[in-house]
Image (cartoon, rainbow, N blue to C red; front, top):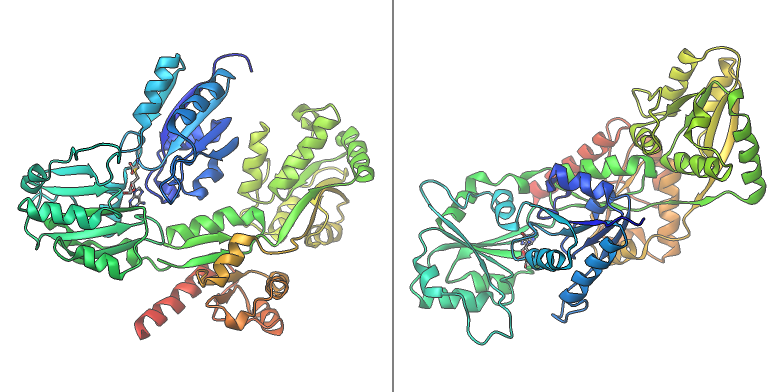
Length: 514
Ligand code: SAH
């Protein structure tokens, strides 16, 4: 890359990964490098195809790790190397985010840049907590104020007298550490201590927490709870509307962290459904992948030389797609080698991966299952050539059996190894031990057995956990019980949405009995 790159300062929105703009999502997918701050939800980074890196300017204890000038310099350097750089910032890049300082540095260095706004924390917090900061009868203005000023500044630039007279809602960003002081100053300046006040933590996230009170008692209430940043202090009559406009906290999985031990192909959609129901998806992969060994690589190469001998190429995972194309490149070929062959993908995630290589699948079965794929392939088989399945080293054997019964020859080509992970990820183990994983979902008997083994390997007794287990089917439940896991919810039929529904039902029951 020799031409000059460019930097896009992009607002990531307040937390819910669905709240980025369409433009922001496109840029993320397109970027060579994404430099994000600590507020950005990791789920959002799944949209990125390039490298992602966190640049934390402030550590929790307030010490700067990476000075702002260094971030500015990095953006300039990467763009000069020709990269498309997305600087992804929580909320809106120009609202208390120092985005405009980064833009000024780029401008000065002659690096082209664009800015994409985002939903700022204040608007999201109000909507997700259930009030409007500018309700027609309650507030005719809203002020966004920083609660955390530059500590090197001698005198506060916040005019508390003016804010006390402000005819509308006050929203303080970065206010948690200075909250008692801010409230005292406002009361001293004449604002009534009875003014309705709320602190909204983790707005739009499953960990959202709203603490209500009035200006005079909110500091005390905060002391008694476990309010965690990021949070906003919102002061004004509008806060009262929360009683009838609260909706987010009513979602069926609100507040629940749900471990997803599903194959990679289904995990992204599964996680998205959890988010839409108000829950926090935690990825718990049980399988890891690895490239094939040298003798197998030679076999793949040989097969690639005779692609014209096949009628269909069958792809059943995005890893399979990536690995197939890697071997195609190694063989000195590209997508044109597939010109004469039809391509079937098992699901939309696989088909999307294929599109990255410039190809559209000829067939994606209506239901994401090997049986459905086999059915469709049998219907669409033509001539007498065999079909080619680029597969993982392990997997179900439905496809070969069904095709064989239909008289179709299937050649199976292992393009990557998949093997059991040796241990659960350290983040997951930490959370299990601290009791902050509410559910683990089990979607097959093998997964149930494996989860039990991995807990055992980590010396965690399932009975000691605050975590409950949800199963997708009676056979999965039976396998789980045999392996020592108690099942607390079971899907009415073996489908992911119904599994989530079972968890929601159990949760509603628990909340109503507590
Ligand atoms: N550019 C960001 C704000 C950056 S300053 C925006 O437009 O939202 C960081 C402050 O934003 C935090 O201290 C907190 O006050 C607020 N904030 C960011 N995300 C938040 C969230 N999900 N919930 C509550 N407050 C949030």
